[in-house]
Length: 313
Length: 288
Image (tube, rainbow over the protein chains, first blue to last red):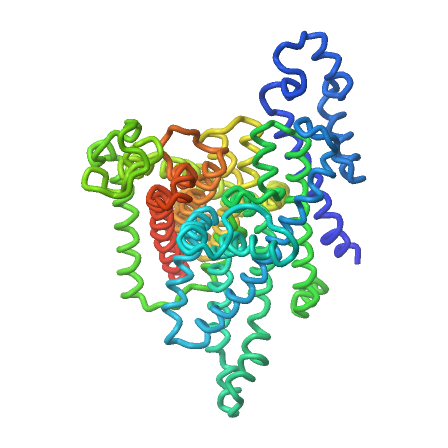
């Protein structure tokens, strides 16, 4: 019980704490004075000192880190130097767009990736074609996919709008279709690659041979004998892929001019808006740590062998 | 960018599926493409028809023609020449990341298996923290701390890729350690250094090369993505990720050639390195 608490609660918390320190250090190292943004170049050194003191920027780094961390835990990420409003109010509307985009892309990845992988794994004739598609797909980065989709479907054919977020749910989904596909392509190929390998390894195993020999129907063999055993690698890779999509939005939102947290992070890095960079960085790391921990836990629940191994140790 | 666990997990599942003779032909073809790209990068000044930064106000955003085989960009610069010159920085960055992360990853993995104990536990903890950062975010943070350009992202990605490589090499090293030849080395009285650095390393070298090749492809994607969003190499340098972004406005006006050329260069390079890396991984694991 104690070792389990350590594995799923304490270890992720330590990782998060260390990651937050790395984040803060990176922003603290940032060259240039962030106050130039507020005061302009003409302000006197005394004015700089006054504002720095008022914002707490003149205190030692560990103190500032502690203040930031305790604030962040309570959901207070401070104020944006550029937008002059609280970081939370800046992120809240944008994170909806980003989450919608990630959710849309995840659905595409799971449906298309797993289906393609099953086809490639079950049918030896389709396998080389699927493998080839996968090999090509993983090499297409989100931004290249984005530009190509814009060139074909938005400029040439005019089926989809090029930029912006759209109104209402239907409008939003229409605006998010191309970005979601661009975000999904490399991950579809990756999920399909792993699914294909897992399914084909399972389809050649003795217990599936036996099921075939017993005269069970194809779909039933697939559902009850192949997929059940192949589910673990598929689940693992899908979860990790979906977790990493959030970082991918950085590129895709930029390409499509979407106002999500990815493009906000990019803009804030260029503007040296440190509080916003810290908040979004922390969100990305948090999502990643939570997903990997949840995945680890889920694997433990699903696979009795892992539990037995833990007990034996 | 979504490389999570990709370097380490895929090969284990994919190993020994294809027959050997056919596999080698594909690997040779991929290797030839990689070599050709390196040659293009080195000899770009001799191959390119124009200077990459000559601005020609009379030939702005043109489609392909005899004078400019891939057209010109929004400043009238020759797209083909920029793509050829772009190979230099676009390949230099990943090469640096590959060399540094492979060296670090191998050193950590081999030392960890050899020394064990506290050193092993501390490095494992440290690697766990690095795993929490998506590679791209880590590179963005480096840009925050040290400014945009090539150097900061290269250092950050080198660090971010180290745990992925270390994990694979470590697994192989743990496996090798129990083999008789290493025991024989110890019985012969060879020093740990000689045993680990020479005999063990020799036997996992194919896997190290394979992981390095894969890391090259993925770091190229990350570095190009970074310059695409304006945090990497800065204009007017010729670099593929930057070119895709610079071709954006021409693309909206129906001239996709610049984005297309740079995007195709990226995809072809990454496919070649990935295929080569995966074949090499499969071979090294078939040997074990």
